[in-house]
Length: 59
Ligand code: SF4
Image (cartoon, rainbow, N blue to C red):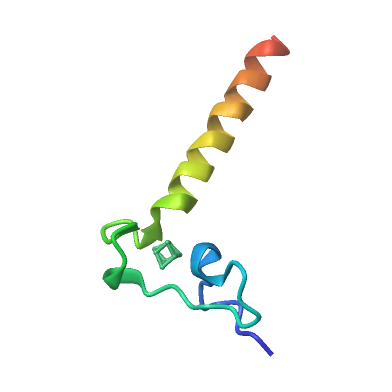
């Protein structure tokens, strides 16, 4: 059973039968001070922008 606490890399896992674990500091896309993948940060910011636009649309 997979441990949900271990982040799986969606890029390196694509096309693999076995999920590949995030290599964190050894990846150029890892943001050390946030302890997050840059893909996560971009997606998170995109969702916040979308939420803000939807809130403004409903005002
Ligand atoms: S930081 Fe790198 S290895 Fe980790 S999930 Fe993101 S792209 Fe994959």
